[in-house]
Image (cartoon, rainbow, N blue to C red; front, side, top):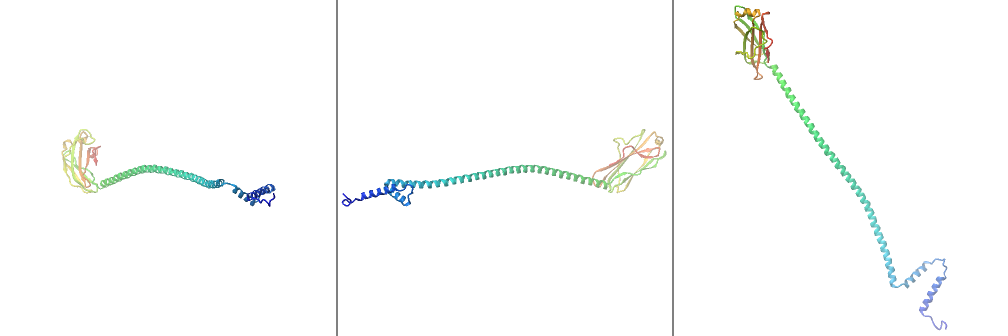
Length: 295
């Protein structure tokens, strides 16, 4: 039978075309690469021969690859964030460490300042005490200086009463012994509230001065102006019976006296005392070794 009597069906034609394509492919030069059109046709034919399940698996695979890629990018971003965050954390830790060290330095400086403040307070207190001691010393010295100046002024201005030039008016074997004793104010202010007392004694041997507890009979005297004089006169001393003994040195004649007064600067009572001895050689009165004083 020839082909005209039996026309081929469509399935047989398709098989013949596929066989022709395969044959052509097999007979092609293996050293010549396939063209893009041939590859596209091949893929199209392969997809046409695939079942629906296989095509679904391919799509899922592609989606999985895409998801994996996207997930990779996400993980990469997270890894970058983690690395960047770790770097920032390290910087923060470094900054925190620096701040902690700075805080420690500030605390140490504060402690040093506190110690310095305590030291300064202690030494300031010592300095204050020293200054107070200096002020107290200066105050005492000032008071002492003022007191001494006042005392010196009062001593310079006060009344000073002493004994003047005493003289024997009369001394013989016939009449009473007469002695003139002047009191002189050599100060610059008056001597007030004055009184004077005089006593005498005869001794068989020399004395150095008035005996302790010797009593005077005082009488009021007049106030003494500066450079003023008050005279005590002894006029009724009977010595005729003792004249020879006094003049030949077997009897010693003494006169004791006191002048008491107050100056105008204080209520203090001042006392001037004297002790006089008759000198038979010079025939005059002389001062004893003691008992002469002016306070």
